Length: 236
Image 1 (spheres, rainbow, N blue to C red):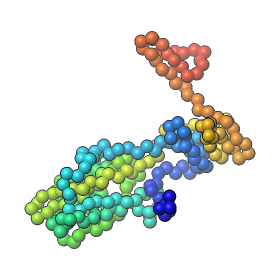
Image 2: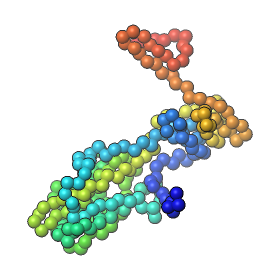
Image 3: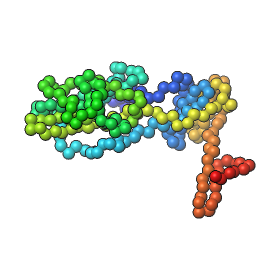
Image 4: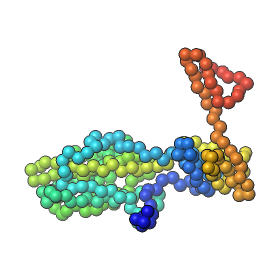
């Protein structure tokens, strides 16, 4: 515990303008966001890189790649620092380039200014000076796992790469529940030690629970099991 030196911003996610409080739902570990009129249920499970075709290095690259969230530029746009790190054979490098694969599978070249350009199989190469750090802005419209690649070529023309998967994550609001009939001006939500939900209106705590209107159809028994009582059910 004594080795903790502080806390830092990891990534920017979801920021509803009317947020009042947060609570973690104990059964699913989902996040509840309280606004004056509603409760928003969100999920922040981090996906695995689906396009990472190799899970381990089979050849030591000339340079290694490190990506870090740029804490010096906060805000809605997510700035990423790309840091090339020289390895043992870095002096054999003749040319290099940076490229990326977005969550949709589209390939992009990364220019010397840190901008995304149309990918070309033999384009985007740099020669001469050693590679420098780049600052890249990830678009908020393309959340998911990005793959960043540093590709190097030596004097024989042999190419090798280092790939860094980076989660450009986002909180996914799954459902919004209107609570104005229970609490006209919701101030906070909280769960107690027995996992019971309480709503706070600024003056009193109101006990509440989630209600599920769902059904299960059992084809072998030709039966429908309901989670609530109904006067009439129509099967279409």
